[in-house]
Image 1 (cartoon, rainbow, N blue to C red):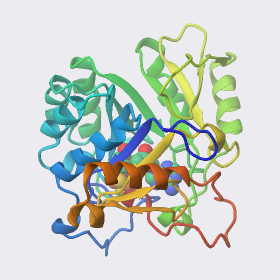
Image 2 (tube, rainbow, N blue to C red):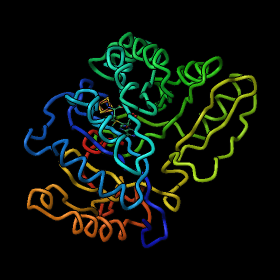
Image 3 (cartoon, rainbow, N blue to C red):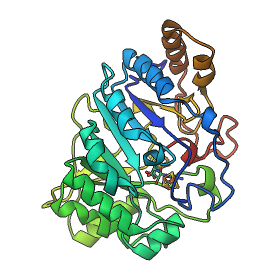
Length: 329
Ligand code: SAM
Ligand code: SF4
């Protein structure tokens, strides 16, 4: 399915819940989080209807996200059901990893294709401070379980000035022996990140720090044709098994290559991370829309996907007020 800018939409990011077992400073407030009511969240049957309709329109990859997707009950069965939808080639998950120790094996058995694990630091005290409630040991146990289950692993880190700078080379070092991709993501001015008093580190600086630390030049890795991978630009360090990736949404807009739409936990089809535009699918589903009309509504909405984001425009009237935990990244 193409949008008006001839972009091929093949990738759905599906938020299963707005709840989370952590309170990362740049994502969620410490207290007073307004949660969706249970009845306002799409049921698994409703989710599967949307996934089937989108798959018929050409979506091939689904990423489950949150809030924290592992806290949604029945997740393993949902992975199995989405994987069985004709046309869906990949089901992957973005998680903070806290519960992976007990779930990774079941998720792998259900057909999950890979895990993106968000981990900003390997220092237990910094981890606790950044997440406000988390224990690093739980995530490390999760990583072991992912590797034991043979799942493809990517580790995502948001570099923050004065907080996890020393973790940049420590995280990259994880890719020395193991086939993991360590990716650095620019802090985006969304939700709490606007007020948390945190400063992101530009990706150009992260890249040069890595090269300086290891005394090696990062070598660009080409992207295979037809790849469903996201906007990370990937590199290899000589002698390393894994890769290092960089996502700088603000410095380098990748909107012309955007292949994704998002579905929030309450069933709003979001066409751009930063914009309000989209479609209230929950209402349509609960009013009894037919499969044909659902596909038509999706096609018409996606046609109008915004051409680009306006993160740096503080006065953008079309900016979505949803926080990251309500969208899923
Ligand atoms: N709870 C899961 C997790 O943390 O992986 C999934 C949802 S979380 C919102 C998805 C990703 O968004 C995480 O990697 C997190 O670091 C990232 N994130 C949250 N707020 C962000 C911000 N303001 N800028 C950049 N990334 C952000
Ligand atoms: Fe939760 Fe993920 Fe947001 Fe952290 S980044 S508070 S783990 S949703």
